[in-house]
Length: 310
Picture 1 (cartoon, rainbow, N blue to C red):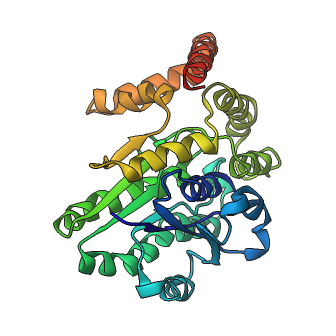
Picture 2 (picture 1 turned 180 degrees about the horizontal axis):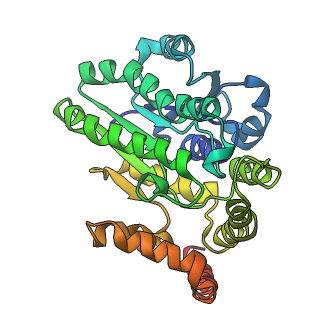
């Protein structure tokens, strides 16, 4: 197989930037990367990270996943409109009590996280089907498998992404087009930091005092501990994404964080759904010491695993 053209969305920072740069720096030069972002005024971080690959194996283009016209214009600008691999990464976050979120902001989130993916796939899939080749890689989340406290709308968007891809993957197989969901757990990025900064300043007057207390005094501190103990770097996710793209038989689902797998496994262990709900409820509200001890154990495991990979 020759050089493959990879279109990556959401490359101004975080996972998208890391994936674009890692593919562009591939030692075997297997990829030509089209790294895209909605606002080209934010391209400096990507240019600096790309280094000598810029305008060689990596080029930067404008693409707004919320605009069919912008997507079509970007794809039309490519030779033969050829996209061998689509990496859909563009997304936004939202956390907090449901009563404090506007329906308009929820719709905007779905417009990016779900309909952005749909627009992109709708544009590139017909050409992939015609060529009988292609790979659609979607940055999903463990929250596309298991919903989490105060992540109602974000998790809903990722559940929608997973259902869309699972349904479409069967048809895609008939045309030799592969689909893969990459499911990170906590990843320490500017994206995550911004979401949590906004959450700490959030106006909670729209909800009751007890819910506001749970969010401020329990959820936010717990989340910080989870990110400290289980968080991956964007570069770790990017490396696993590269390995998934070059695999002979890439998986449909790939969780990037092995330490998080026991939490998502709870859902499949009990078809009634009681087990994960009870486990998360008790960890958060009943057994604070168990939660902290578990994170301490995970932190030790994370350090040992990091040493092995160095």
